[in-house]
Length: 385
Image (cartoon, rainbow, N blue to C red; front, side):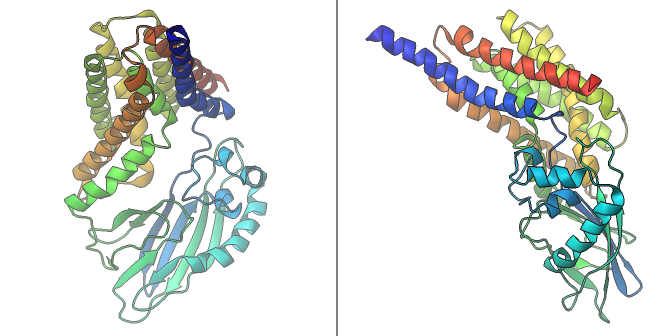
Protein backbone atom coordinates (compact mmCIF):
# COMPACT_ATOMS: atom_id res chain seq x y z
CA UNK A 1 0.00 0.00 0.00
CA UNK A 2 2.85 2.37 0.83
CA UNK A 3 4.50 1.75 -2.55
CA UNK A 4 1.20 2.41 -4.32
CA UNK A 5 0.75 5.65 -2.41
CA UNK A 6 4.28 6.74 -3.25
CA UNK A 7 3.76 5.89 -6.91
CA UNK A 8 0.47 7.78 -6.97
CA UNK A 9 2.15 10.76 -5.35
CA UNK A 10 4.81 10.84 -8.06
CA UNK A 11 2.19 10.70 -10.79
CA UNK A 12 0.24 13.51 -9.16
CA UNK A 13 3.36 15.64 -8.89
CA UNK A 14 4.13 15.20 -12.56
CA UNK A 15 0.56 16.02 -13.51
CA UNK A 16 0.70 19.20 -11.45
CA UNK A 17 3.88 20.31 -13.15
CA UNK A 18 2.66 19.70 -16.65
CA UNK A 19 -0.63 21.38 -15.88
CA UNK A 20 1.25 24.46 -14.79
CA UNK A 21 4.07 24.51 -17.32
CA UNK A 22 2.82 22.33 -20.15
CA UNK A 23 -0.28 24.46 -20.60
CA UNK A 24 1.96 27.48 -20.93
CA UNK A 25 4.06 25.65 -23.47
CA UNK A 26 1.03 24.83 -25.59
CA UNK A 27 -0.05 28.44 -25.45
CA UNK A 28 3.40 29.62 -26.42
CA UNK A 29 3.84 27.15 -29.28
CA UNK A 30 0.34 27.64 -30.56
CA UNK A 31 1.12 30.98 -32.17
CA UNK A 32 3.83 31.97 -34.53
CA UNK A 33 5.02 34.59 -32.06
CA UNK A 34 4.74 34.47 -28.30
CA UNK A 35 3.50 38.04 -27.96
CA UNK A 36 2.11 38.71 -31.40
CA UNK A 37 -1.49 38.10 -30.40
CA UNK A 38 -1.54 39.92 -27.08
CA UNK A 39 -3.97 42.81 -26.86
CA UNK A 40 -2.61 46.23 -25.99
CA UNK A 41 -4.64 49.10 -24.55
CA UNK A 42 -6.37 51.65 -26.74
CA UNK A 43 -4.63 55.03 -26.68
CA UNK A 44 -6.71 58.22 -26.91
CA UNK A 45 -4.78 61.45 -27.42
CA UNK A 46 -6.95 64.54 -27.06
CA UNK A 47 -6.64 68.31 -27.12
CA UNK A 48 -8.90 71.35 -27.19
CA UNK A 49 -8.95 73.22 -30.49
CA UNK A 50 -10.95 76.47 -30.38
CA UNK A 51 -14.45 75.33 -29.38
CA UNK A 52 -13.91 71.65 -30.08
CA UNK A 53 -12.33 68.58 -28.54
CA UNK A 54 -10.21 66.69 -31.03
CA UNK A 55 -9.31 63.04 -30.37
CA UNK A 56 -7.06 60.58 -32.12
CA UNK A 57 -7.94 57.03 -31.07
CA UNK A 58 -5.28 54.38 -31.68
CA UNK A 59 -6.92 50.97 -31.47
CA UNK A 60 -6.80 47.35 -32.60
CA UNK A 61 -9.83 47.82 -34.85
CA UNK A 62 -9.94 44.16 -35.87
CA UNK A 63 -10.37 43.07 -32.25
CA UNK A 64 -13.14 45.60 -31.64
CA UNK A 65 -14.99 44.95 -34.89
CA UNK A 66 -14.89 41.17 -34.47
CA UNK A 67 -16.85 41.55 -31.22
CA UNK A 68 -14.21 40.51 -28.70
CA UNK A 69 -14.80 41.38 -25.04
CA UNK A 70 -11.49 43.12 -24.47
CA UNK A 71 -12.06 43.23 -20.72
CA UNK A 72 -11.58 39.46 -20.59
CA UNK A 73 -9.68 38.44 -23.74
CA UNK A 74 -5.89 38.56 -23.39
CA UNK A 75 -4.77 36.75 -26.53
CA UNK A 76 -6.59 37.03 -29.85
CA UNK A 77 -5.81 33.43 -30.74
CA UNK A 78 -7.67 32.14 -27.71
CA UNK A 79 -10.81 34.23 -28.32
CA UNK A 80 -14.00 32.78 -29.77
CA UNK A 81 -13.83 35.42 -32.51
CA UNK A 82 -10.29 34.46 -33.59
CA UNK A 83 -11.42 33.51 -37.12
CA UNK A 84 -13.27 36.81 -37.65
CA UNK A 85 -10.27 38.67 -36.26
CA UNK A 86 -7.87 37.02 -38.71
CA UNK A 87 -10.24 37.67 -41.62
CA UNK A 88 -10.25 41.38 -40.77
CA UNK A 89 -6.52 41.34 -40.12
CA UNK A 90 -5.70 40.56 -43.77
CA UNK A 91 -8.00 43.20 -45.27
CA UNK A 92 -6.32 45.93 -47.26
CA UNK A 93 -6.35 49.40 -45.65
CA UNK A 94 -9.20 50.75 -47.81
CA UNK A 95 -11.43 47.78 -47.04
CA UNK A 96 -10.66 47.88 -43.31
CA UNK A 97 -11.23 51.65 -43.38
CA UNK A 98 -14.81 51.04 -44.53
CA UNK A 99 -15.27 48.52 -41.72
CA UNK A 100 -13.88 51.07 -39.27
CA UNK A 101 -16.25 53.79 -40.46
CA UNK A 102 -19.26 51.50 -40.07
CA UNK A 103 -18.05 50.29 -36.69
CA UNK A 104 -17.51 53.85 -35.44
CA UNK A 105 -21.13 54.82 -36.16
CA UNK A 106 -22.40 52.41 -33.50
CA UNK A 107 -19.40 52.37 -31.17
CA UNK A 108 -18.62 56.08 -30.70
CA UNK A 109 -21.95 56.78 -28.94
CA UNK A 110 -20.89 54.26 -26.26
CA UNK A 111 -17.89 56.47 -25.40
CA UNK A 112 -19.62 58.91 -23.07
CA UNK A 113 -17.89 62.29 -22.94
CA UNK A 114 -19.36 65.10 -20.87
CA UNK A 115 -18.26 68.74 -20.66
CA UNK A 116 -21.07 70.66 -18.94
CA UNK A 117 -23.36 68.42 -21.01
CA UNK A 118 -23.08 65.17 -22.98
CA UNK A 119 -21.03 65.61 -26.14
CA UNK A 120 -21.64 63.96 -29.50
CA UNK A 121 -18.51 62.42 -30.95
CA UNK A 122 -18.33 62.42 -34.74
CA UNK A 123 -15.91 60.60 -36.98
CA UNK A 124 -13.75 62.91 -39.09
CA UNK A 125 -11.39 60.38 -40.62
CA UNK A 126 -9.84 56.91 -40.47
CA UNK A 127 -6.18 55.99 -40.84
CA UNK A 128 -5.26 52.33 -41.32
CA UNK A 129 -1.79 50.86 -41.36
CA UNK A 130 -0.81 48.46 -44.18
CA UNK A 131 -1.38 44.75 -43.69
CA UNK A 132 2.30 43.97 -43.19
CA UNK A 133 2.99 40.73 -41.30
CA UNK A 134 -0.46 39.17 -40.78
CA UNK A 135 0.74 37.62 -37.52
CA UNK A 136 1.33 41.03 -35.95
CA UNK A 137 -1.39 43.44 -34.84
CA UNK A 138 -1.72 46.73 -36.69
CA UNK A 139 -3.02 50.05 -35.52
CA UNK A 140 -6.08 51.85 -36.83
CA UNK A 141 -6.62 55.50 -35.95
CA UNK A 142 -10.05 57.09 -35.60
CA UNK A 143 -9.93 60.89 -35.90
CA UNK A 144 -12.83 62.20 -33.82
CA UNK A 145 -14.18 65.62 -32.87
CA UNK A 146 -16.93 67.01 -30.64
CA UNK A 147 -18.29 70.52 -30.18
CA UNK A 148 -17.85 72.10 -26.75
CA UNK A 149 -20.65 74.14 -25.17
CA UNK A 150 -19.86 77.71 -24.20
CA UNK A 151 -18.06 78.01 -20.87
CA UNK A 152 -17.10 74.35 -20.58
CA UNK A 153 -13.76 73.99 -18.80
CA UNK A 154 -13.85 70.41 -17.54
CA UNK A 155 -14.69 67.02 -18.99
CA UNK A 156 -15.13 63.39 -18.03
CA UNK A 157 -14.95 60.30 -20.22
CA UNK A 158 -16.59 56.99 -19.49
CA UNK A 159 -14.83 54.14 -21.27
CA UNK A 160 -17.36 51.49 -22.39
CA UNK A 161 -17.46 48.04 -20.85
CA UNK A 162 -15.81 45.40 -22.99
CA UNK A 163 -13.35 47.91 -24.50
CA UNK A 164 -10.33 46.76 -22.46
CA UNK A 165 -7.65 49.12 -21.23
CA UNK A 166 -7.53 52.81 -22.12
CA UNK A 167 -4.54 55.13 -22.00
CA UNK A 168 -5.92 58.69 -22.05
CA UNK A 169 -3.40 61.46 -22.78
CA UNK A 170 -3.98 65.20 -22.94
CA UNK A 171 -1.87 67.49 -25.14
CA UNK A 172 -1.03 71.17 -25.70
CA UNK A 173 -1.66 72.32 -22.11
CA UNK A 174 0.44 72.73 -18.99
CA UNK A 175 0.33 69.82 -16.53
CA UNK A 176 -1.66 67.59 -18.91
CA UNK A 177 -3.76 64.68 -17.72
CA UNK A 178 -2.49 61.13 -18.28
CA UNK A 179 -4.44 58.17 -16.98
CA UNK A 180 -5.07 54.46 -17.39
CA UNK A 181 -8.64 53.16 -17.17
CA UNK A 182 -10.42 49.85 -17.61
CA UNK A 183 -13.69 49.13 -19.37
CA UNK A 184 -16.67 50.59 -17.52
CA UNK A 185 -14.60 53.20 -15.66
CA UNK A 186 -15.13 56.96 -15.68
CA UNK A 187 -12.27 59.42 -15.52
CA UNK A 188 -12.07 62.09 -12.83
CA UNK A 189 -12.85 65.64 -13.87
CA UNK A 190 -10.18 66.75 -16.34
CA UNK A 191 -9.45 70.45 -16.76
CA UNK A 192 -9.58 71.36 -20.45
CA UNK A 193 -6.97 74.07 -19.82
CA UNK A 194 -4.64 71.67 -18.02
CA UNK A 195 -3.76 71.16 -14.40
CA UNK A 196 -4.97 67.55 -14.37
CA UNK A 197 -1.53 66.03 -13.93
CA UNK A 198 -1.60 63.14 -11.48
CA UNK A 199 -0.06 63.69 -8.07
CA UNK A 200 2.92 61.48 -7.18
CA UNK A 201 0.70 59.30 -5.01
CA UNK A 202 -1.92 58.93 -7.73
CA UNK A 203 0.72 58.07 -10.32
CA UNK A 204 2.27 55.44 -8.05
CA UNK A 205 -1.09 53.78 -7.39
CA UNK A 206 -2.27 54.00 -11.01
CA UNK A 207 0.78 52.23 -12.45
CA UNK A 208 0.82 49.27 -10.05
CA UNK A 209 -1.95 47.38 -11.91
CA UNK A 210 -0.25 48.14 -15.23
CA UNK A 211 2.93 46.44 -14.05
CA UNK A 212 1.05 43.51 -12.54
CA UNK A 213 -0.98 43.01 -15.71
CA UNK A 214 2.21 42.83 -17.75
CA UNK A 215 3.20 39.75 -15.76
CA UNK A 216 -0.21 38.20 -15.12
CA UNK A 217 -1.73 37.38 -17.48
CA UNK A 218 0.19 38.94 -20.38
CA UNK A 219 3.86 38.28 -19.68
CA UNK A 220 4.22 34.62 -20.64
CA UNK A 221 7.94 34.85 -21.34
CA UNK A 222 8.55 36.58 -18.00
CA UNK A 223 6.38 33.96 -16.25
CA UNK A 224 8.45 31.14 -17.72
CA UNK A 225 11.70 32.84 -16.69
CA UNK A 226 10.47 33.19 -13.09
CA UNK A 227 9.36 29.56 -13.11
CA UNK A 228 12.83 28.65 -14.33
CA UNK A 229 14.20 30.34 -11.20
CA UNK A 230 11.63 28.55 -9.03
CA UNK A 231 12.42 25.05 -10.32
CA UNK A 232 16.17 25.40 -9.66
CA UNK A 233 15.71 24.47 -6.03
CA UNK A 234 12.85 23.88 -3.61
CA UNK A 235 14.78 25.74 -0.90
CA UNK A 236 14.00 29.37 -0.12
CA UNK A 237 17.54 30.77 0.01
CA UNK A 238 18.54 30.01 -3.62
CA UNK A 239 15.21 31.40 -4.83
CA UNK A 240 15.68 34.64 -2.88
CA UNK A 241 19.20 35.12 -4.25
CA UNK A 242 18.01 34.66 -7.81
CA UNK A 243 14.89 36.83 -7.58
CA UNK A 244 16.85 39.58 -5.79
CA UNK A 245 19.43 39.68 -8.61
CA UNK A 246 16.70 39.64 -11.25
CA UNK A 247 14.67 42.37 -9.54
CA UNK A 248 17.64 44.71 -9.03
CA UNK A 249 18.73 44.34 -12.65
CA UNK A 250 15.39 44.89 -14.36
CA UNK A 251 14.70 47.85 -12.08
CA UNK A 252 17.88 49.52 -13.33
CA UNK A 253 17.25 49.10 -17.05
CA UNK A 254 13.53 49.76 -16.74
CA UNK A 255 14.32 53.19 -15.34
CA UNK A 256 17.16 53.92 -17.74
CA UNK A 257 15.22 52.88 -20.85
CA UNK A 258 12.02 54.65 -19.83
CA UNK A 259 13.93 57.87 -19.19
CA UNK A 260 15.56 57.57 -22.61
CA UNK A 261 19.08 56.95 -21.34
CA UNK A 262 19.33 53.55 -23.04
CA UNK A 263 17.73 52.42 -26.30
CA UNK A 264 17.99 48.86 -27.61
CA UNK A 265 15.95 47.45 -30.48
CA UNK A 266 13.27 44.92 -29.62
CA UNK A 267 14.66 42.77 -32.44
CA UNK A 268 17.71 42.28 -30.19
CA UNK A 269 16.04 42.22 -26.79
CA UNK A 270 13.24 39.74 -27.50
CA UNK A 271 15.46 36.88 -28.82
CA UNK A 272 17.84 37.39 -25.91
CA UNK A 273 14.96 37.18 -23.45
CA UNK A 274 14.01 33.85 -25.03
CA UNK A 275 17.64 32.73 -24.74
CA UNK A 276 17.64 33.65 -21.05
CA UNK A 277 14.69 31.32 -20.51
CA UNK A 278 16.59 28.48 -22.18
CA UNK A 279 19.72 29.13 -20.12
CA UNK A 280 18.10 29.04 -16.67
CA UNK A 281 15.99 26.00 -17.59
CA UNK A 282 18.92 23.99 -18.99
CA UNK A 283 21.12 24.89 -16.04
CA UNK A 284 18.39 23.60 -13.72
CA UNK A 285 18.86 20.20 -15.32
CA UNK A 286 22.65 19.99 -15.04
CA UNK A 287 23.50 22.03 -11.95
CA UNK A 288 22.44 21.13 -8.42
CA UNK A 289 24.14 23.82 -6.33
CA UNK A 290 23.76 27.60 -6.45
CA UNK A 291 27.14 28.86 -7.63
CA UNK A 292 28.14 32.52 -7.65
CA UNK A 293 27.89 32.75 -11.43
CA UNK A 294 24.17 31.99 -11.55
CA UNK A 295 22.98 35.16 -9.70
CA UNK A 296 25.49 37.14 -11.78
CA UNK A 297 24.15 35.70 -15.05
CA UNK A 298 20.57 36.19 -13.86
CA UNK A 299 21.44 39.82 -13.10
CA UNK A 300 22.52 40.18 -16.73
CA UNK A 301 19.31 38.58 -17.94
CA UNK A 302 17.37 40.88 -15.66
CA UNK A 303 18.87 43.84 -17.50
CA UNK A 304 17.34 42.44 -20.71
CA UNK A 305 13.94 41.86 -19.14
CA UNK A 306 13.96 45.44 -17.85
CA UNK A 307 14.30 46.63 -21.44
CA UNK A 308 11.32 44.48 -22.32
CA UNK A 309 9.27 46.02 -19.51
CA UNK A 310 10.23 49.49 -20.72
CA UNK A 311 8.68 48.82 -24.12
CA UNK A 312 5.31 48.50 -22.37
CA UNK A 313 5.64 51.89 -20.73
CA UNK A 314 6.52 53.31 -24.14
CA UNK A 315 2.91 52.69 -25.19
CA UNK A 316 1.38 53.96 -21.97
CA UNK A 317 3.49 57.04 -21.51
CA UNK A 318 4.38 58.54 -18.14
CA UNK A 319 3.01 61.64 -16.39
CA UNK A 320 5.70 64.27 -16.90
CA UNK A 321 5.48 65.63 -13.36
CA UNK A 322 5.43 62.19 -11.67
CA UNK A 323 7.75 60.01 -13.73
CA UNK A 324 9.61 58.49 -10.78
CA UNK A 325 6.48 57.54 -8.75
CA UNK A 326 4.90 56.06 -11.88
CA UNK A 327 8.05 54.03 -12.56
CA UNK A 328 8.11 52.83 -8.97
CA UNK A 329 4.44 51.87 -9.14
CA UNK A 330 4.96 49.93 -12.36
CA UNK A 331 7.94 48.14 -10.84
CA UNK A 332 5.96 47.27 -7.71
CA UNK A 333 3.24 45.83 -9.93
CA UNK A 334 5.82 43.73 -11.79
CA UNK A 335 7.21 42.42 -8.51
CA UNK A 336 3.76 41.58 -7.20
CA UNK A 337 3.09 39.70 -10.43
CA UNK A 338 6.34 37.74 -10.12
CA UNK A 339 5.68 36.90 -6.48
CA UNK A 340 2.21 35.74 -7.43
CA UNK A 341 3.72 33.38 -10.03
CA UNK A 342 6.07 31.97 -7.38
CA UNK A 343 3.22 31.65 -4.87
CA UNK A 344 1.05 29.77 -7.37
CA UNK A 345 3.93 27.43 -8.29
CA UNK A 346 4.71 26.82 -4.63
CA UNK A 347 1.05 26.17 -3.81
CA UNK A 348 0.62 23.71 -6.67
CA UNK A 349 3.99 21.97 -6.53
CA UNK A 350 6.53 23.12 -3.96
CA UNK A 351 4.39 22.89 -0.83
CA UNK A 352 3.25 19.34 -1.55
CA UNK A 353 6.31 17.80 -3.17
CA UNK A 354 9.29 20.13 -2.61
CA UNK A 355 10.80 18.00 0.19
CA UNK A 356 10.26 14.68 -1.54
CA UNK A 357 13.59 12.96 -2.37
CA UNK A 358 12.45 12.47 -5.97
CA UNK A 359 11.30 16.09 -6.43
CA UNK A 360 14.20 17.08 -8.66
CA UNK A 361 14.03 14.07 -10.95
CA UNK A 362 10.25 13.77 -11.12
CA UNK A 363 9.23 17.42 -11.02
CA UNK A 364 11.96 20.06 -11.44
CA UNK A 365 13.81 18.46 -14.36
CA UNK A 366 10.70 17.66 -16.49
CA UNK A 367 9.36 21.16 -15.83
CA UNK A 368 12.70 22.77 -16.70
CA UNK A 369 12.97 20.71 -19.87
CA UNK A 370 9.53 21.89 -20.95
CA UNK A 371 10.45 25.51 -20.25
CA UNK A 372 13.69 25.11 -22.21
CA UNK A 373 11.84 23.75 -25.24
CA UNK A 374 9.43 26.68 -25.27
CA UNK A 375 12.25 29.20 -24.84
CA UNK A 376 14.25 27.59 -27.65
CA UNK A 377 11.25 27.71 -29.97
CA UNK A 378 10.72 31.38 -29.20
CA UNK A 379 14.40 32.13 -29.84
CA UNK A 380 14.32 30.48 -33.27
CA UNK A 381 10.99 32.12 -34.04
CA UNK A 382 12.15 35.61 -33.07
CA UNK A 383 15.41 35.35 -34.99
CA UNK A 384 14.52 33.37 -38.11
CA UNK A 385 10.73 33.30 -38.59
